[in-house]
Length: 287
Image 1 (cartoon, rainbow, N blue to C red):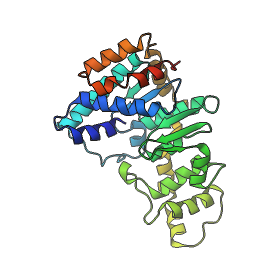
Image 2: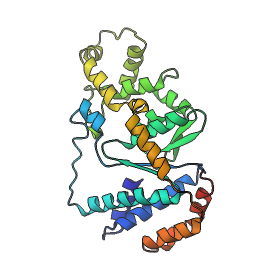
Image 3: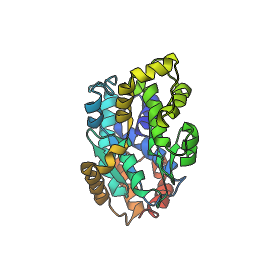
């Protein structure tokens, strides 16, 4: 959401101001949360590439170069730090940690609460399919698409081991945006066909693509390890980071005072102040 707010802000305002990034973010956030009336909200930020994944694949996200002197990059960092500091004052749990990605925190939260407490992950990143659980959905804001566990099973064509199927498919296809190389000539449908055979130990056949899989099983296993998010559930460091973030969240006794103070700090945007009713509805449901 903050990346989206950054893009819209830079497009609309040539002055580039971190406060405008924050204002746009809050409008997007409250507009989206209004759809679900949650009893608790976790926001995840990350500052860069995963230490865990770079130990497995050193070139992971190595294609993403940042210019530390770029005004938009500086403003983005300032907006992120401000939000991380301010969101707990608004009753929202905020998590920001070097070297650990938002995807991993999201998996941990979904794993913790499913299936007893229903929830929804909010991200436009399809990697977050891995964070879907029974009773935990994924909402993709720009597509206005709510994806359930049943939908996820349909997407991968398997209702017994959908997460493993997804990892197998993605491991063969690779991910250019994260600099994870896959198998040449493998798209989603081709990989999906072979993933089922691999998972259920069926003969791959004698085609050139079957031979390519057999010759590159080490690459496929490595890619699965890089893409997997379930490694976090037994990681005490990450569990403690989440606990600390939960303890830092404040109970909001005077929502109007809190929202008015924030709006003034951000320059008194009347459009942001007008979202007060959405914030008031949100905060009164938070436990």
